Length: 550
Ligand code: XIL
Image (cartoon, rainbow, N blue to C red; front, top):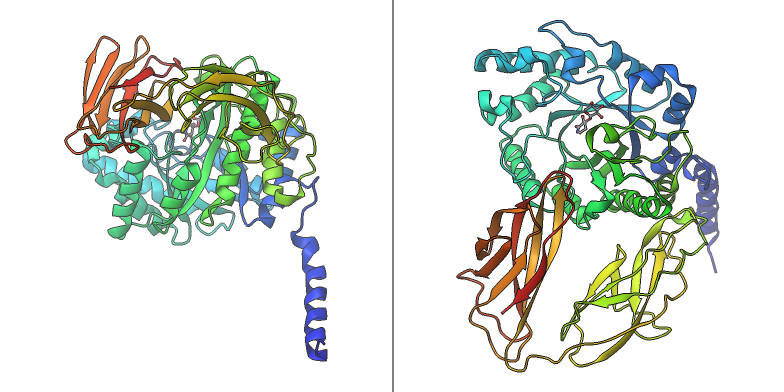
């Protein structure tokens, strides 16, 4: 029996909950910022000053949907200090005032960058450049230091090259690496409360660049340099694949004790836009928001704009666009619903399954693996297409494999075995499509005593390069191997720029990778990995193929 004092406590808790809940709960139709706040995160957008002062629809969406804003250009050096000592805060103030009126926070972007910085800065001597940098930071940060709306700054932006070396910008070439620590110290001196961030692109996954960033942040903090936060820009493209280790990467930075955030999210596609590309894009948006939700130290997600009417993408990436969550007419796209439903968590109302995938086509069938490709599904229920499950048995609940794209390499298959498999599409709310038609294939004979396989995974890619990591090398035979040779083909025009954990030679487009000293010995059913990086012509989206192992 409940004691009467316990009943009283429970009643009090119930009353408190009833009182508190309306303030924190968000129904399905609430704007993004309501749901984000309920999850303890911000949802932000970059704003451009001209539509902000000229277009009601732009202003209304910016005000109602987002809890944080970033000036897309108005706080950059060329806007705030076009000539030395002549500061102009008109654009910056317009954004800050708008945010204050709408109860939003401002993330300041950006203090020290190699782009959008006037020529007068770039030509200075080392001593003059260092003091110009310190003065700029002190004036710009100082202007908003006592303004509660401006809460954080990108102190340095894009200091790395894609290979993880420090970018040889005019900052680095004139001042050396010390400009980074000096910039953070100057920002802290100008505002002791603002959160100070380092920001970059192509650091969403675990790769050479993000690892260099990780090492720099760790060492700066060890030296007492006030780096509070790491910004992952998140300029993604559906044709380059989703960085599936995003959450893991955010978490490793969080474990250093810094706050993390997605600062410039957009997901571009090759134009023209279509329903299937929109569905894939929605998945990317949802996955990014979920990664942030799953990492406690992730403060929030900022989208780089919100309407396709004003996006930097078409001007920057030829033939690409439609990267944002509203179309040119301010209509929300599937990607808006994906962000909304991810932030809303359990309150999603999507009960419509995706369309049925096409018949899978099998290729590259070996003794223990097979490649499958099928026509993609679409999802109209709002939560967006999340991926595909591949099953062997009719009615099975455990998939043989899962993929976020409309293809997969099934591994761990048995030799000389007939497989009959089908695919079901999955949406963000967990609805599964009907079964695709079946495909039947038979794995080849095992290789008896010897044999090995190799397969490469593109870990990260950018406009003109990529990292393949890992290339897995597996001894599929029954006896131990004392060395291995993997070959693969680079598409025309691609050039190998680095490799690790293997000794590599290139002849034409054929790459031969032999084991390194430490990873040649492989017992049966064990494997090892190596990796490489390559460059390719701008805009080329091909990746290497034809991995063989002997
Ligand atoms: C872009 C703006 O969106 C464009 O309007 C401008 O012409 C160029 O800069 N990384 C950054 C942002 O940190 O400042 C850039 O913004 C996009 C890439």
